[in-house]
Length: 504
Image (cartoon, rainbow, N blue to C red):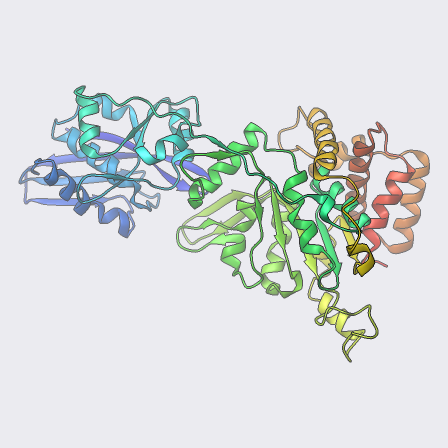
């Protein structure tokens, strides 16, 4: 009789249920695993055999066949060890078959029978909750999985503990969720001297998740401004925290089962590969764009990134998801992030300073910024020049609004947007609005519409640019607490659009 156990196979952040079937039949002694396993899954038989030997359980001199169904779904990872061991023990009548079949299990076995933590416990818990089953996982992964409150999570330290739990000799208490991780922010927006226009653009970008391009000479404060973004962004909502943590779980970034309410801030180096930024590699792992989901992706030295990498950003920016294509699968990851890019105006960085610029000026600036294609530049809602700060300003004491004050204003604007889009499925912020919805929420007054029309006609504003101006104007109105988009809101939004524009 075939014994059944259950586990999951990961396709992006989705965990698909896999049925582990085990049959022990007469024949030449053998232990085979079928069902499109990768090398790590095929090696599970040796780890399972060693773990059972450590428990003084001898395999019978029969033919043991383990089938992973559906058979055409690729199975990758060492987390198949535990469900294979459970199915085998159930087939040998060591464990009750009914109890094993009501459990979704994942975990890697050491040769001594200890359970090693694995990636993806949180998505696996979501899949177990949808199926109405209990999740069995390594003890170190239990706190992470227990954040899914709709499922009972059993965290075991070894295969022997699992056996004693199923036989009723020593039941394991359900795991409890890990602690909420709150990262302290020591970088305050007040530390930035001058740069009031850039600070304002940073506030607008954070309020509506509008992509921002900062261009200025070296040392003008571009990276300093970007580093203060996490301090003014509101904490993740519960749904957002779960979405983000599922991606970080697959990447192995959750520590001790804790889920963070702090928005991600990813800043990859400009030498990063396409697989590192977009996702891919072995197992089609999430890239930086997905790890920045619901947070910030900061790309310093933006033109220095390979052109192929920059161009692949265009579609994720528009759709909010990235597809990693493979010969046998297409893996999707969500990636709704705020893109903040920083760049020098030219290679030497001193294009605007006649005394310090290189001999190739001004052509060097055109060549350098020309690495950013027109379609990619068109996707930046806010473009700001960050001029050098005078020494006299640096010697002044800190002034202006603190991150807490600006963050409170951003939180109010985001709360207003949350109420506005409460009935929408894929729209959370103004940056997500499009079509008829955008026309309804961002329709400017007569004066604002007249100004926008004249600007669009004069500079040849693209359709995408027109809609992005409307979104930014709506966010500016939200920061002001205005119900209607008015002419000053449109004028400010257009002003951020014109800098470094290819349309002028």
